[in-house]
Image (tube, helix red, strand yellow):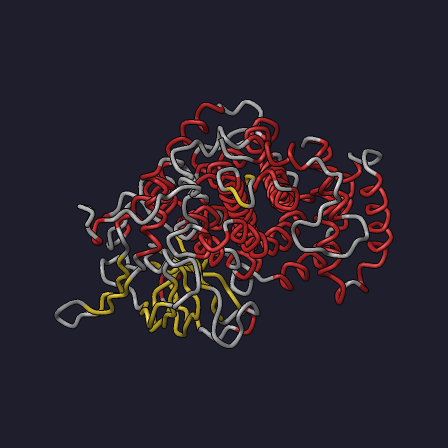
Length: 544
């Protein structure tokens, strides 16, 4: 009998299995991002982004994202003696990511350090950080978007914005006077209304000294450990906006009670709760009856971040798919060298780059005060880019085969995260109705979009014909509501195509135009025309 026993016999050699995509530079290895930052943010120090990209691509940092989702937040309603504390506890990985995001300026840099290209710089950093983990960026986004609203109210701005802009993350559950930094949340929707916030029933009762008492509920409150929340409630003068702190100025807990944490299919690291307001103290922000108008600028910025976050989700999914396929062989050849897989990978890369160039172009518009263009471009991008992400995440997962379906792969988390941005901050129909509202009230916004597209006229036949059709449809905005999704999709595609034609390699732009603009229906990924230069597109998108 052999000296080798059955228990220690070697059963097989592990080969033809990819190594993990870790310890790479998320910025330096992304050609499209480097070019977009240089183009939309001339003068920005690219070395800063390269250092950030190296840190975020490190294996230990990427692991923080996995840990923050593996260990979900937990609710502690009471302390051991029965006192209500309304405290949500998070894994240390979540706090590490929050600390890094705040230090990187994602919560406030365009306001705390304004200057040329501030929004482009922040958007690029947000894009990189999202590829590590998306959920913790919900409170970051809300804090970033709150500054323009709070800045309108001098007393509140003086009390809160220095903490919001401090660049310090302070997770302690304490009154704002005892903290080094602050985050701001939102609590808008209720059970009976959802996106129809005019149906809100939460009451705001005036008190002395300009304070209000809020009585009612909120059905979705993300980041419930925020230091204060912008809230919509019904005041005597109508639906109004309020700032409600977690702690009263006298150092006692506010009457904000967390009922339960939501059990979400994704976005696990970020707690979302249902809450009741039992006479919670709040300050009025803006005039009574103007709550929606007051909050509008904040909502626009959160929608902008949804778009950037979804673009980042596409980027990491594309990178994972290409990296797997350039290492894995099947049927005698690397997957990346097989024609049909090349079609799929190139298609994923084209959609990813289209989302990126669009998002950073809008960031540039924010920097340059192109209000008419941004007014339409934000709901357009929020609609199309966020809606494209779930199908994109699935197709990238399929490139990894069964391994991509396993929970120890990053792909299930990307897939579960993918629908969130399309739903939050106004779902698809809301974005399309907002688009129509903008086109009716500010006709120059459509002119700005069409002018942007026209810069690429004559460069691709598909875009020229597509633009002519759009202009014809836009002649009667009043009759577009039932077809608003189709119009929004086509208008956003035209903008993406024009940007790719002007700024991306010809192979990428041509593939997008022929597959998204020509009248061939809406095929699934991997149906690009057979003469597209797949190899050039994939090589450009491959993580380095």
